[in-house]
Length: 317
Picture 1 (tube, rainbow, N blue to C red):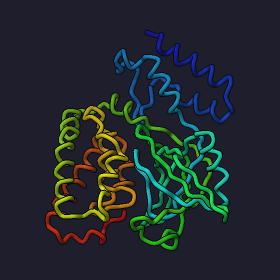
Picture 2 (picture 1 turned 90 degrees about the vertical axis):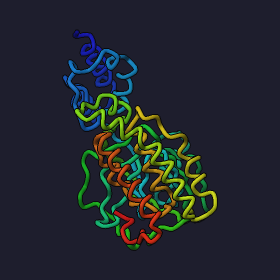
Picture 3 (picture 1 turned 60 degrees about the vertical axis):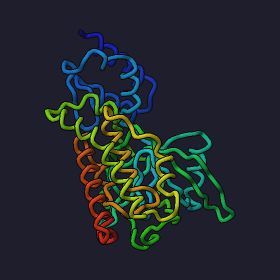
Picture 4 (picture 1 turned 135 degrees about the horizontal axis):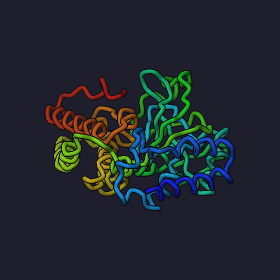
């Protein structure tokens, strides 16, 4: 019965022995009698046998708290898992992002709140797929957010904000966002598939039912969208679906919910649904994520059918 704990201890000692000081502290804090899964702790004795294999252990080590490069988007963009976004990088930040691109390194992406102007405390992991330099020192960068994880800033600065009202105005189709800051931050990672697998909830049956239901709700939403001709340009939704890939299966509820949220709030926006991106990133359970996207889907479908929804009046959070 002590073997799993011994394995964890051996790996922890190895990391501590050959890591910088800040990494050692994170490892010592993370290796506890309970295994941290997102914002929850699952006691060892409540985990089943296949939870304690080496694959799981390797994934948990990868998602220990760490310090990473993060970029903050100055306008109203906020990325969700699986989304793609093209941004204009100012000269002062180009060299850092160019090195990340050259070494195929991922980084974190944070957005800003439209209402308060503050930098959000939760974001996504992304990598650069295209990098184009310009003669004025700036660069155009295309980023792709990974599908399996999100993060939370461990020591957020509540005073950190940008004057988003002056940055670029309300985004429209084809308008690129600007990178406002590039810096290193300490973050805590959430592996969505592990969080779902070990989430202890008395309402798991209901969560499973909602996850299954999303497939038909998405099909209905798409039918109404096409029927009411809400696309800003022909083929816009088809490209969004191609970028997102297939809908994750119902037994991966958090990834499934994020896929739906990315469809509802794409880049650039369709302007047919409430902006739930910040709410989704701040959610801590699959149940919360599913409830958020289901409510948004039903609301958007109903109001598109009505035909006179004042969408722009409360699109932003």
